[in-house]
Length: 67
Image 1 (cartoon, helix red, strand yellow):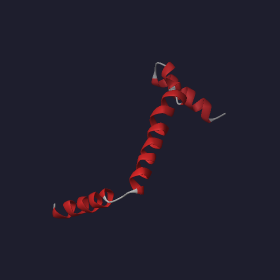
Image 2 (cartoon, rainbow, N blue to C red):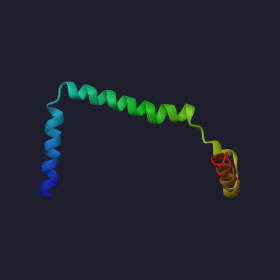
Image 3 (cartoon, rainbow, N blue to C red):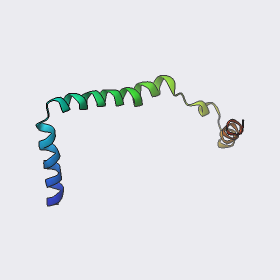
């Protein structure tokens, strides 16, 4: 448990003393949010949702893989 606390304090002190790094981490966070949430909502629609059974879904997947 003592080692875990030392690791936590190491990273905590490092992030606390950052100046430019904080801005870069905020930019990284915003980009990840855009990539995984916004783009998923608008561009990656669930194509297999229109099929009701697992058998129909598997047939469609096999047909698309073997084209």
